[in-house]
Image (cartoon, rainbow, N blue to C red):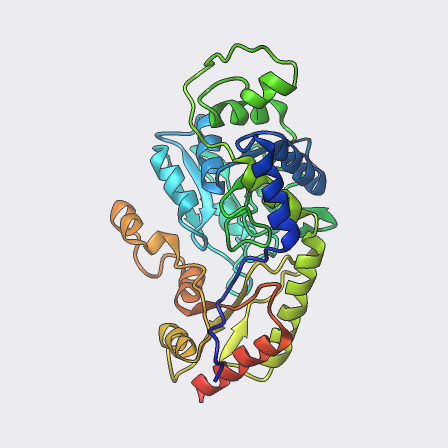
Length: 378
């Protein structure tokens, strides 16, 4: 058994990252400023969008988006249940209704036919999720969406490509830089779009409803008068966080290449272990970011929760991404969801676990994980 505990993830922070944050601390400008502007420009350049708005979290981006789009009571927003609950929570808090739809049983990516079946005259937005680093089928989703706006949940998708283009290129998208993400700010998010009016509104809503912040006024020749255009929130990203994200973004290829190497070794070593089934790949052209390495524990000997506990007893950390949103207590009681509503989502919710995957791992670490899994199953 391993002597040291192997967590399921660990932020990959190097001396260059620390130096970038230290430089901001010494600069005297530690809140929204030049590092934010640089981070926004860098991500927009990678994705291929004209505009990017840095925010305190991806959840904040979703909150602002619903406000800007004036989505509220009587409206519906379609999203898969197999995702973190922040999307559903923001929809609910806006007064709208989250419409949970089915995912593919093998890839956990939202099914375009399920999206099509859920559309009603009240549908105001579709939010597909790029799950674990693999892209949803955007062409098919666009086809069924028609004139309904599509905003991609790209929280897992820095470095994910769909049919040759980076995720977010053809729609607006929301990225996350939480501590467990491939690229991290500790906490943070980014909204990207080609819609100038949408970007301008998001920027205003994120900072008290003021049309410009201090950095705009002092460095971009804007008026020194800070005037409230409409009431807003306080969702800006600090320059300390932005500097970390910007420096990490410079090496996204290196980070994702290491994650891919480890994921491919996992697949190879699990090939003869039918009780541990990694997620499948979509059929279209794509590049996986490998944010998570998820498997389904499907054994008559033990359930997923027991497997996770036994792995922990062997100094191997695991995660659970995610329990389905529609069967969470609040949504069960608010909307009357019952088991069997989304069978493929629910099967995966009961069987998935995330195995350790982060750039500072070694191939020997992967072998330790697989060896522990064999021992548990035996």
